[in-house]
Length: 235
Image (cartoon, rainbow, N blue to C red; front, side, top):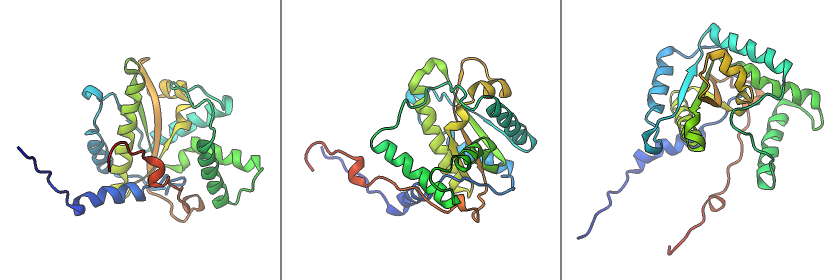
């Protein structure tokens, strides 16, 4: 018995490729809220994300209107008191080799776009604090997982985050996933009334981009194809 593999129409596959290759992290948002109906469509698309054993561990708290400003104020005050914070999930212990190279290159691109010279710790520190101003975004989505599911619950939430980012991009909504927000997990838990079993994975600031702002003028570099894959077997 032979089986036939149905050919894929490139016209069908291309839109996803375009979304993946053109999405970028926005670091300054326009003062314009996203319609509630659009946010619902983004989340409705993301909820079809696959997960291990179909556990669907993600839950998302989304702010609108004054709730975003209230959260921004709470973050500002907390970071002023404790800039280090305490994430629910451990941050990387260090960045070494190519990971440090990529991290450094990304930071330099941002600083160069803003005219921040190397070694200007005052200006770079001020820019770092923009994370907790949500880069002026009118909305933030806080993604949490269930602690009982461990690392794979967080991995599944990472898939949900990517679905959210791509769905938003498909609707003209800009995003930036921020691990920096997760550093303030105790504040987030208190602010949103999260139960103890919910762990903060990441926050996603989103809205419409201010394309005239220099922080949105660059794009980070991706790995080359051959750096991503190791082929095993006959080709």
